[in-house]
Length: 326
Image (cartoon, rainbow, N blue to C red; front, side, top):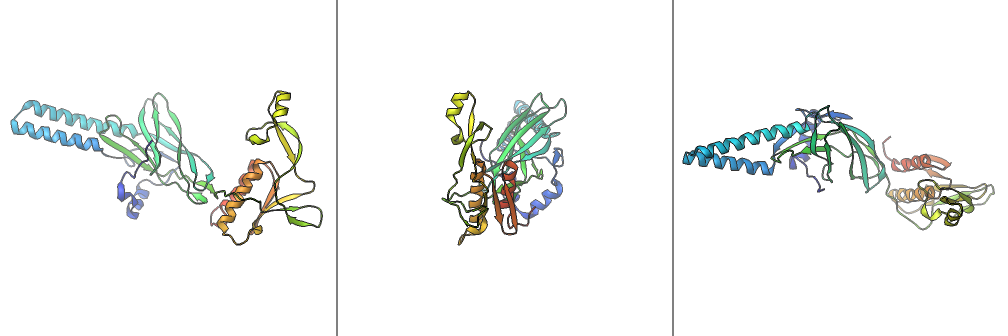
């Protein structure tokens, strides 16, 4: 769907308007649409329709034509009934915040929004989106709950606030546009944008006194195991899969007695943001290879480990590095 522009145009960018909107529709995790937070105005088609009514009425008065009078009043009644039904299509709708996704800087991030309504009520042709982003459509017909995934583009690393969510409808005739600007108090964690490099900034600390940078990421082959969702395709053992009849994955083991660390201080003469981007790239690479590794940052150290929780702990540390955020 097309991108949605701010429903209030340039007025929506003013600080005074945002303060007024924050008082009228404060941030909440669950919001019920009602008179206080629904706005409604004629659409472009509604304006043309109004002009047509006025022209027909003027013609009827000028020529004293009762048929023109009747047509003008019929169109006016249709116009008013359309306004009532457009408002009613939003009124009573409940929106609640769901899960906020995680992503990398510059990529799309998904937010889950749950739409629900009272029993016996239908809400049709709804459009939900963040400002200036793609529209997600929804209908609540013969069902009380609908779960939507609404996307927008993430900004810089750290906690990302997507702003106010727009919910609108032009049902049933398109003559009016009813909408609400809601702050569901969402925030998503945005990781640094991963930037590849040839050699990882790692140190291999063994039991010996030697301490030197390791160049390369190869491990010793240790055997095969059952395939797990998320395994890298290149690690699948096709021979073992064909022999055993079940999908198998190659398994590697790190050098005996070695601890591998991604080390902030291995970088020189580059910006902190570029360091974070390179470290994020290697966190992703080592996680895919299922290789135990740790992370050293100024004033922070995360010991070697494996698994999704370990990966997220490291990415969170990189995302919030140097920021006054928790």
